[in-house]
Length: 271
Image (cartoon, rainbow, N blue to C red):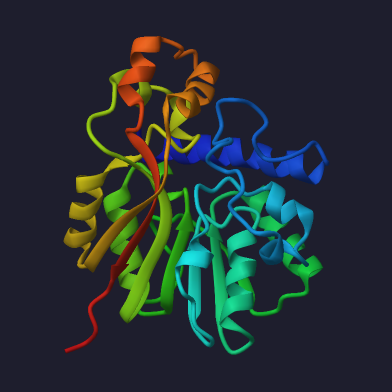
């Protein structure tokens, strides 16, 4: 699919998620085809979400908790690619403190509106939400210390461009610390063809070695991919039934192949 078509689909899907949350219709996963449990379940502790608006938690469609794994330091500048309802941005802002800053970047107007509302309600000042594409980050070179993202890079049709942009806006010595869905081994074509699974955090996932290769090509060093959740056949069945893919042979082929992972990499320091 072309970049514009994927962008349109992502905007439509996640715009509907934001509207459902605002209207009090429950969490973001409104059907079985989106990125639903077990991927999004139990990612944040009650201590982390204390003091945050419920809407920030309900709008989360992530596959990990990058803010807990990124080891953010006081005074750092953080950028969240695909910030959605803003939960990871707000948590990052708390961690970096008033002398630091957290940016959120999102493509969808409804999500940006929800995120800004959540920021106001949480009373967190050191946050700025930006509209834009993760393939074209609206920040200058060497602007941030840390880039996080939560189950969003897999949604892009041009992941090479995303990682190149991430490298550009990181300061020398800065780090990438993202949660994403990663694949080990080949993926059945029926899954790749499914638009619903693509925008639901599965079909667009990179194969692990390809992910490592693209990070290296962008200039990153010290690449690590750490599995945080391996999805078994019972997990997959919830995804595939919503897209009309209920074949038991197909399900067995993907058993244990998809995983939520924490991806770390660094931009080399200046010589």
